[in-house]
Amino acid sequence: MVTRTRKTNTEEKILATAAELFYANGLRGVGIDQVIAESGVAKSTLYVHFRTKDELVARYLRRTDDSWMAQLQAAAQRAGDDAAAQLVGLFDALLDAFDRHGFFGCPFVSAAVETGLGSEARAITVQHTQRRQAWLTELGAAAGAEDAGSLARHIGLLIDGALASGRLLQDRAVVDEAKAAARLLVAGHTSRQNRSTTQETR
Image (cartoon, rainbow, N blue to C red; front, side, top):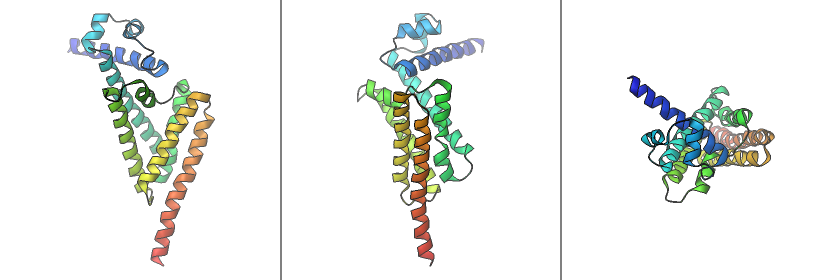
């Protein structure tokens, strides 16, 4: 039990260090030696837990996928039970991210740019996007959008655009603007559905 706990703690330390470095500097900008130096573990210890840099990158991206989805969903839930409000409220997760450490952009977009088309890292980025969009589509349907898929795609573009502009400008105002645009977008999609429902019941 003690050995397992020590192994888990060491693995977590390496992964947490790598996550900070990868997010701030990109995948190509960080070498294994830097991860070793920053985490304070021996090279042999790191390779016990992660056989290659690609394996470490994959674990980092999967961890980030879970973490970022949890942050988006928590922000949405703080907006209340109404799905339309949640589609707008989820943008508070981006504001929280900016307030913690500024914008370094979207780690998944960065990974997609820096890795090959057939790489595991790129596959994880695609899976993350699909997972996020499926959730947004569910919220759109719950909000009464006539075309929940279209609404989800537009919201996804606003999220990605806010992250990209936020990295470029280092200004949280871009998220406020994306959130305002999302509010109009959601209202437009759901009001059309409400009008159709009203006409059908006349």
